[in-house]
Image 1 (cartoon, helix red, strand yellow):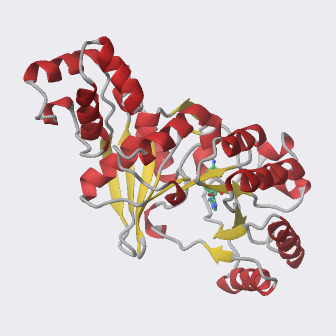
Image 2 (tube, helix red, strand yellow):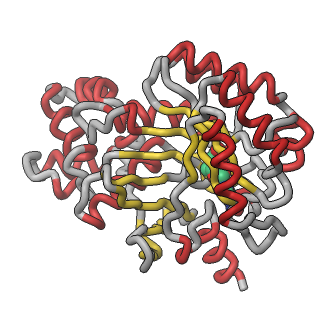
Length: 344
Ligand code: SAH
């Protein structure tokens, strides 16, 4: 059993069944999720015998650092780590004025097939466990010695395609006996799985939902994102409206600007209408070209003009600040490069 994926209550029940008092569960939980112990041996207020018996009974998930690249431009760090079965995941550490942020992966690979995204090129391998999502943050905190205040689930994978593990991860990450990160400082990005967005709305969490919108009509969205064949734009937007209504949290619309594809005047006008109707914040992401696809980024001027048009119409809009452009910053690029170099 994977001990780091258990909630404190579950751990108390586990320990009770072995005749251990609840305070032992609290101690072990805090070692794992607050003091970020790398193994049972570090849990020095437990007896040697107890540490040994924990080791015999439970799986203790930890990641192994395979590679770390640090940006010379902004200090952003990209980590490539190995899971216990040898699969590789990417996570990113970013320093902002308001605190440190970590971007984590939710799956090994991805099955969503978005055209501009490197994470999906090699397909989907498996879901990550809650402990494997947490460990991406813990390992970075151990490595940098710095605190993390914001978490974005925007790395490789579709988090809502790994729904149960994702929600459990949020509960563990925000628990007061763990890192106790505020729900408001957690953002989950989805390509738009309608039933899961509605289910998430009912969890009444205070996390931010970001929808990968990327186009303003079904036809254009289908050309970029296969998921648009399953759910219409109308269905996805209504699910976002429902999320806002249930949680009081404004949705963010992510819009990767692809030169000559979705950055016309008409696109801007349609985007304004959508953002206004659903009271959403727009986050523009100048497309990060990957070598496997022929998508181009517009000029700085074109991107600014698009943004200004939205702003003039009263839309709350930001251009995603680019971090770590010199270190394979786009989703899935580093993992893919390492996988393919190894194979060659
Ligand atoms: N599966 C989730 C998380 C994906 S990554 C989702 O689909 O939302 C976070 C964002 O980066 C998504 O909006 C994704 O569409 C976008 N993205 C991925 N690759 C990109 C690239 N090369 N250039 C610009 N945006 C990209």
